[in-house]
Image (tube, rainbow, N blue to C red; front, side):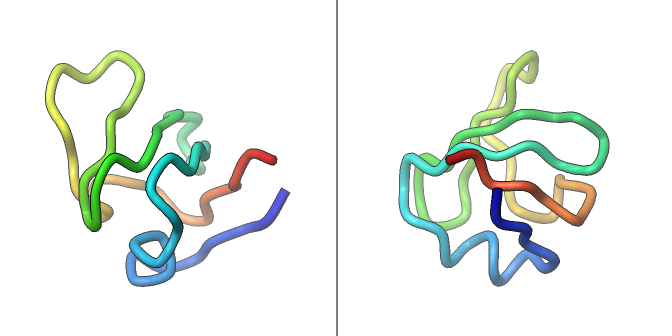
Length: 57
């Protein structure tokens, strides 16, 4: 698994990327700075996540 340490690096991932943050939130990128988090009812931005973030293969 790759590790991301900043919101800018997270935003650079391709749409569809799946990852887990340092607080065990799992999310999928749906747009440039929009993510769907398991258990959260609305899209969030990259500032929501606790870094480092681990990208799923």
